[in-house]
Image (cartoon, rainbow, N blue to C red; front, side):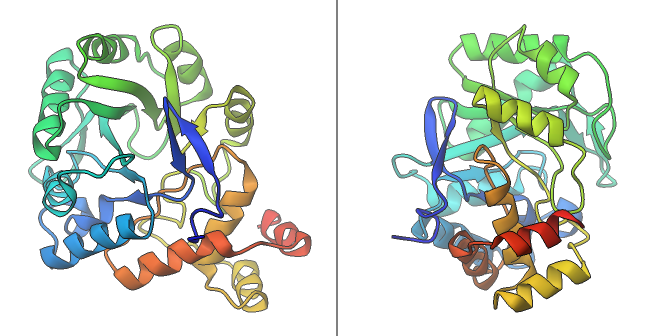
Amino acid sequence: MTAIDQAGTYALGQRTVKRLGYGAMQLAGPGVFGPPKDRAAAVAVLRAAVESGVDHIDTSDFYGPHVTNQIIKEALHPYRDGLTLVTKVGARRGDDASWLPAFSKAELTQAVHDNLRHLGLDVLDVVNLRAMFSVHGPAEGSLEEPLTALAELQRQGLVRHIGLSNVTARQVQDGRRITPIVCVQNLYNLAHREDEALLAQLAAEGTAYVPFFPLGGFTPLQSDALSAVAVQLDATPMQVALAWLLQRSPNILLIPGTSSVTHLQQNMASARLVLPADAVARLDAI
């Protein structure tokens, strides 16, 4: 068995994927803008991820922009059977690397076609609508118009499944009146647990929850308790943080990102790490 086989699987729309996937955001340049310092290394990481058994890759055409999708295509196309590519729309990058809303029907249509072209696909497995009412976290606002536009692209056969990202529980509920929602991608990790109620609700409904920044994002997680548990279990703090998420709820799908094959291998090994009850209690108290 590979490490991620032991982490189990979960439904993502009509697909079943291993719970430990890969997030491609870090394959772009600094600040997720521009090309990577070492494109060959980025290609190598993607190929190593798939060879390790990863069958769920998260990306977006506004990473770079366009950079990560182009690297994914270079590294992995034609894609092996069973590989699920999940992308995001709803944002664009300014010339100054800023993150800007791109919610209009025309912008979303263009984004879907851009993702298809840059990934080399005829249909996108899952498209997450990224809510951009606030860049730094969920904020209330109507998603009716952009979701309706995405649902139309789904009816045209360009999108199989639709998810939501950076959203509130109310937006998830309202979105389901427009189209089925197969996953929610929000900020959640050891130090940021505002989504506890939403996570539990989605688990009860059988909907995947995909935490972004599972290791803290641009500011890696740091905690004395986390470090102490890592020493106790002869693991790295990041492996412990990933293992905690895998044990937290069965509907959590992880997409840790890295541009290093060594870090990728460490992330994959976290699926073998079983946290004892006393360690979980210490981590829960963070």
